[in-house]
Image 1 (cartoon, helix red, strand yellow):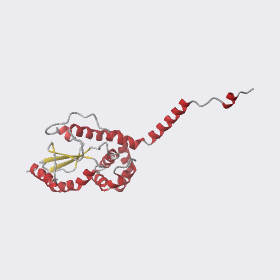
Image 2 (tube, rainbow, N blue to C red):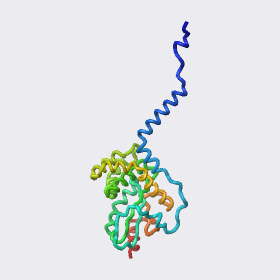
Image 3 (cartoon, rainbow, N blue to C red):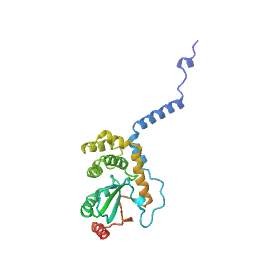
Image 4 (spheres, rainbow, N blue to C red):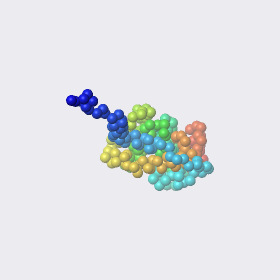
Length: 233
């Protein structure tokens, strides 16, 4: 005689079902994790050393691989900007900084460094895209493109990596090389190094400028221009 319990078979183990659901979710996360990894790891604030006081150390302010946008024959001053491509203030000041480059670029070395902020979901991804473009000589072109199109992608929670890749294509970049740099751990480490240096120097928001090692407090465009003019005398 077959009992009722034996005809139904053993009941599924709830614990096994929970474990199965967890493994499925982990699989989904791994498959979609590339862009999220870039955002989370790049935007995660590093352990902050004590903020620097007075003039910033050259080894922290500018590294050998920092992006120098001008190369004056005789450098009279150095202007370093820590920026975030998803930052609206960075976008707003960008055209004026371009004006200053035209005006003072023969005497001032303009340097850009990455500082993606935790509150901007695609700022880390944007920094990766710019660095990948920089490896093909298009740092300024990709930077300008991201600022020009910021309204299209600013604040979106989903990864904008695919959109940034179309920008790379529009700039005529080698996409295979671009993709390789974006996922390269060395690229992420490079951006983390900028974040760590900025944090050590007391950077808390973007854009933050240092003129000859001194952190600037700016009130107007005229004030900015006058400070540069005084530095190159």
